[in-house]
Amino acid sequence: MIYKIFFQEIKTEVPVRERTKTIYVEAESERDVRTKLAEKKYNIEFIQKLDEAHLEYEKRSKNFVLENV
Image (spheres, rainbow, N blue to C red):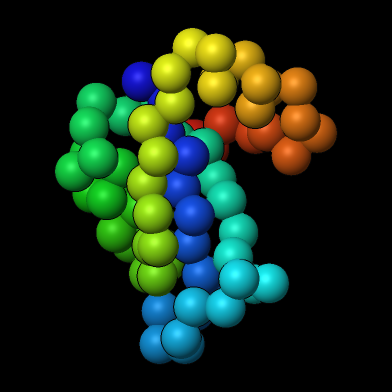
């Protein structure tokens, strides 16, 4: 399953929409995503599980890069 993660790079800052970044991670569950990203110290705002149609849409974006964690 592919998940889209919305996050802030600095964990101690208050989330600001303009600084929100996204990454895509393959994982078994939301918990697995959090485990894989724990060492990166991201302030995770939201984890979205992508269904097939949404994933195909995201793949057309130039920003789509599946993280290898």
